[in-house]
Length: 90
Image 1 (cartoon, rainbow, N blue to C red):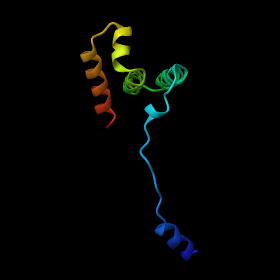
Image 2 (cartoon, rainbow, N blue to C red; image 1 turned 120 degrees about the vertical axis):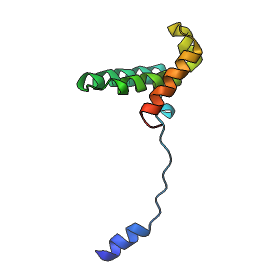
Image 3 (tube, rainbow, N blue to C red; image 1 turned 90 degrees about the vertical axis):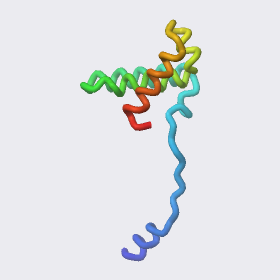
Image 4 (cartoon, one colour; image 1 turned 60 degrees about the vertical axis):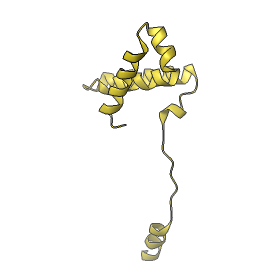
């Protein structure tokens, strides 16, 4: 048993950073992500995760495109996205 544990501890495990943005490639992916965030938010009393997810979705769609569609200025959307990132330690 000791030999197995020692061998496992010596093994190098390669990892790579995970970004949900890499997974949100289509509108269907983004819509599913938002729906999951809304469902999770119903069970949680902290709305910050929903706000964070909306910021991620805006970034996945493109912040400029999202700002135009929402009829808000781009600077305000960038600030919103940055605040949601800070709240969640990005």
